[in-house]
Image 1: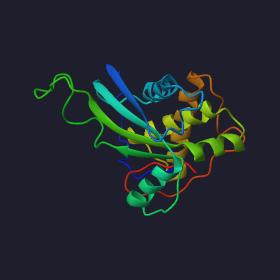
Image 2 (image 1 turned 30 degrees about the vertical axis):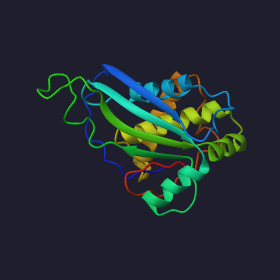
Image 3 (image 1 turned 135 degrees about the horizontal axis):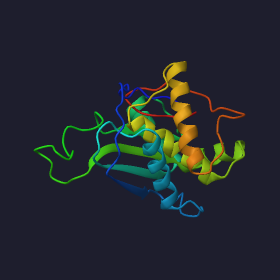
Image 4 (image 1 turned 60 degrees about the vertical axis):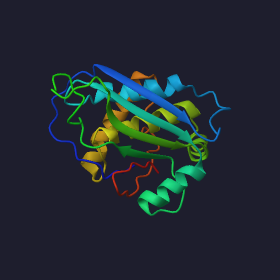
Amino acid sequence: MSDDGPSPGPRQHAHVTALDVEVLRHGGAWDDTNVSDATVELAVHAALAVAPPSKAAHYEVTVVLTDDAEIGGLNRTWRGKDRPTNVLSFPAGDVPAATGLAGDPDFNGAPVPLGDIVIAFETTRAEAGEKPIPLSDHLSHLVVHGTLHLLGFDHLNDEEAEDMESLERKALASLGIADPYATDGMPQSDDEAGLAEIA
């Protein structure tokens, strides 16, 4: 798992006052699964519960459930890697953004975007089958991982990876999902341009 997004600084945890999660399904690949939008939404909430932004605000995250073809194109365009991957994260910018915070004189009530997470069906299904774990559990892990990248977490070195994996374990445990690193941790890969990838 990797990402070159912003490095997290010292955090003073605050509560998210509101969180909007938009789930978009592209291409129909996920439509015949038992994965509900609620599964995705719960995973985003679980990630923010273990790693809340430093300022309380109304935040929003978009999760795109797509296929290997679309994510392969994004991976090629944004990372120069001509292959599909399981998850990419596109942070919206510094966390939290300068506007949209309660108490900000420019606050207009609009949510503060944290960014977008894109997850590919075929790769995710294959990884879940290899483990073997339920598809919904693996998807939840990818959503948690991608959300942590949107919040500025990374795993470019062992210490960062351990910190991020610890947060993932806590978030997944809150959802009743077993530790994905207990027996066979997922391999890490390099990354560029502020995008996340597991495997």
